[in-house]
Length: 323
Image (tube, rainbow, N blue to C red):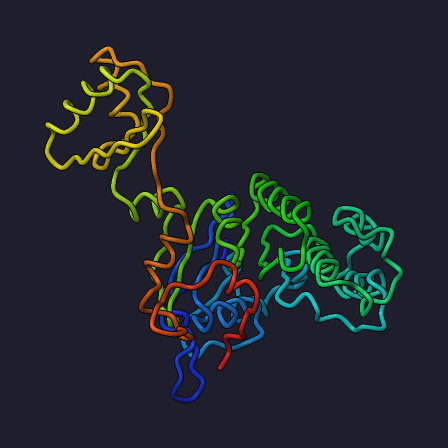
């Protein structure tokens, strides 16, 4: 588990991280979200002992990173996929890491196979694409078979197959009881991957919530139902419209949109009224919509008059967060 208690980092008059307190627990994938400049990278650097907190603590399994005797066997991390000497081969890079932590060299070949770089292992790292560099970074994180993983933007540069591979990998790691702390700007992928969310803005904690609760809190109960028979549809509409706080809209092909009731509640009512349904589903906002609403006042680099970003814009250019 990763424990953050009052974690604070100041650079002169600038507060990059402001009293951050939360627990990143084992057995789940915790997504780490926040606008550019929110303090995500600074937080991860303090967890890994690369930056010293101004105040507060960042602990891994109860101790600071600097106190770990074999750090790669306690926590695996990837903060910068390109942080490799370009003239070294991928394998040589990993062998150096393994020897520094007393890890058998055979483990290098195992993780290269796991990340799909076995055939490119002896090529200079400087010739790797961004996606290949990311795979090498993940290999380094897995090298010591650690109980804790800290990954910053691990899907950058990966093709769709690679993105699915990362998703399965981190979820499998969590299912085995490991702590997975994952930062990404890809909201759709984070929604598919993370079990829990930690969201920060301007260095402060905005949310520390399970994914399902985060999405549910962002939108009132709402559902869609498809009722093929016009008479039955009219019956269901009358019953729904008679309830307080319910709004019903109609669309083509017998579809109803219902605000103020869940799919389960509509299904129960339809069963009671003898109404046949051809479709029934809850309507939830996407993670991107919920996140944008939560962080609207915490965007450091807003553009134009609107705080709504063009989908994909934040993924295209990940700005540094350390002042």
